[in-house]
Image (tube, one colour):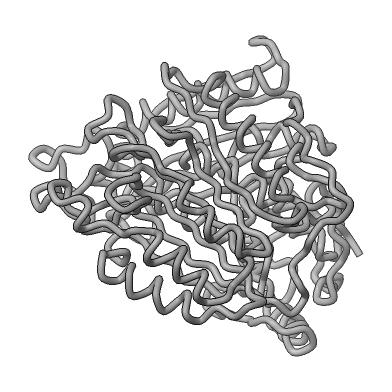
Length: 517
């Protein structure tokens, strides 16, 4: 992948003091109040964007992070004003303040504005939030001198011809100058330029700009990483500008453009975060050598669930929602999802050929009745749909990726570029009853007492979950012979491998995904 324009070179990089607290206010408004009450158009994936941003911050800052997450109706006009005021009043001089917003925004009477869940389409300026009053002025009064703001919104007219995050006219950066001059460092990142649209992507399941922002924050964008593995203010600016524009050109069938912007003020350059090296050392609580593992299958997994009645083709007058688990429901769900999954696999097929540089004969793919797969010499990707076994009224889509050979960094990057945000678990299947359940619980409780974390055991199911203090979760099912590893905010192959490699298991056979003691 081509590299973005390199960041400016400075003699020093300002980093966050070790004793500083990071305070983040994160807002995602996807569904506004009903149109009958004057509500605004839906903003596709805004909730997922906000939740993904929170997950990235949690991975970066850990216990230093204090946050407030406001989604949909929680972000009403009154709640937004009250929360912003109280949140900013809590800031200390040495804190880093981070603001993220996904929704509709515009430049209107008085300056830059963001919408609330109950903003009214026919009384827009009276029911929206003036950022200068509630954010910029309040930040200046607080004495906080370190701030980052990320705004995934755009400003075009209502009723756009294509899906976008649009409202009226462009955001204006002139009003920021007074505040910028009083800060140690401040950066405001916009998803697009004035008069442009900020597009969502059904493939990425995010706003396109936020998707690339998350890649950079998670350390998945090699081209965004600067000297000493820092993601800097200018490095992020250049990466977003190049990557978003390239994606719009190469992957979207649109006539419009999207050019991210950034307003940055600092005496030099500053580090937004430090990107950890790709190889993670064993952690203090990582000794699981007493847990024998006999690998029989290994894969990455992502599970999507939802209401059956929300699926395309479900008609309330003709169909009914099942209240028991049965084979007929599986077949019905497969029928409803067949076209969607077929298109998904076709899109992945094209991406695999392009990203891996393969020809059609090198990629086998098939789809039938809500299931399918893609196979290459490097991996096998599979999708299966069914009825949820725990909630009969819901469907379940399971996506898995099995590596055919040990993947180097380049192959891992190609996989992550192809399957963006699809997987959140690393799974290893082993022999059933591979360890005595009571013995396993004792060992995990010893680990918890020595290094922190929590253990939750389910004797009836012979399943136990160890959750480390950093959010890593290891679920072991003795009866099923299954071990899964997940990490807070980890949604890529490289991230999941880094999490898993912090632990050493008692491997009793070869493994492509786990490390032995």
